Amino acid sequence: MILQAAIYYMVFPLLSVTLVLGFIRLLLGPTLPDRIIAFELMSITAAGIIVVSAITTNQAVLLDVASAWAIVSFLSVIAFSYYIEKWRGRP
Amino acid sequence: MNEILISGLLVIGSFFMLVAGLGMLRMPDLFLRMSCSTKAATIGVGTMLLALALYFEDLGVATRALATICFIFLTAPVGAHRIGRIAYLVGVRLWEGTITDELKGVYPADACLPFGQECLIPDIDAPEVRNDIEQGPE
Image (cartoon, rainbow over all chains, first blue to last red; front, side, top):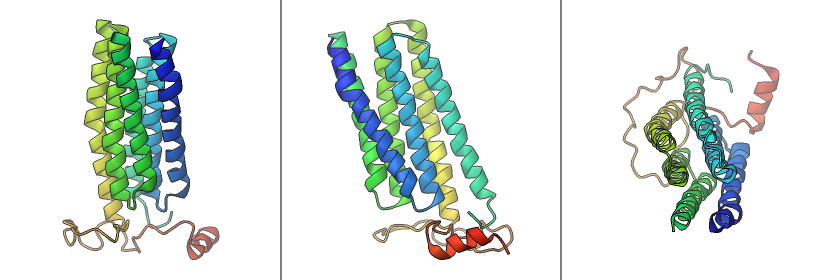
């Protein structure tokens, strides 16, 4: 009871506000690495939303989804930094 | 009692995520923003995964949750270090109030330039850069 109330009135709104803040930085970040770290923050927040969804729906399988999501997020950051390193001077 | 503990952990975790988002929006510099988002978001997701492990009370789920916590704690600094190093190399400007820059002069000025070109990442919204993009490389 208190868990459902805490999740629906505190946790999901805070995580949604975090997504919106990250998206604002993604839109107006002046350089490319700014946008990359905003995207990383958004994907980590999405992993947190998946974890909370595992509690609300009582499905432990969603934990595997969250861990795979974390792996993909890390790999995307590494790939972005690799391509910035190979960048030839044009955006 | 257990429910109160779990909901407290979840609220603390989401509060840390909110702090990370605020820092991402309000900090003046790429490197300060990166420090905020990496530390606070790592703690936030770790706390929420701990709450998940407490909620299911199952050995397999708890093990996977702890493995995911370890993975995030190991990989978030690695990704941040890589992005920060590349950003410093391509010439992202530091904040005006920065008082120490220990990498100043460590790398040669053309460290990131394969062909000796101009190395600053241009502001995409600046008009001359916009003209450059639209006209394409000469």
